[in-house]
Image (tube, rainbow, N blue to C red; front, top):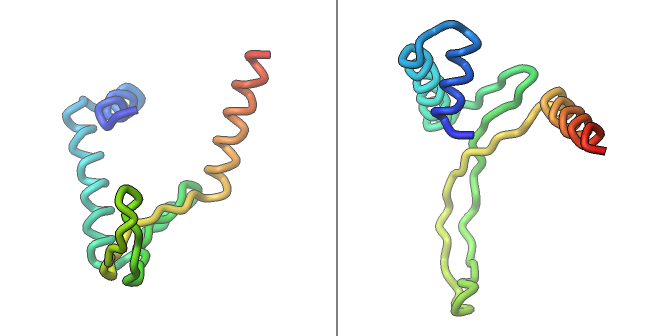
Length: 101
């Protein structure tokens, strides 16, 4: 599913125009990015949490050449799904599989 697909589904479910919905979704995504840039985490109850994780400097290996490569310290965004989210996905897929049988 792409961002355009999400915009279309949300617009259909809310009665907003696609243009309004796209602006809201863009605003949400930009807020998440900006918050993580500032080092703040975000928690959305029932959905999950975003945070930034520090990766220490290390030596890695180039799988093509076998050469050692230095990887500098860096920060990566991570997302952790809530228990409710995981359970909903599990139930949905189990029901889908059961329907096929």
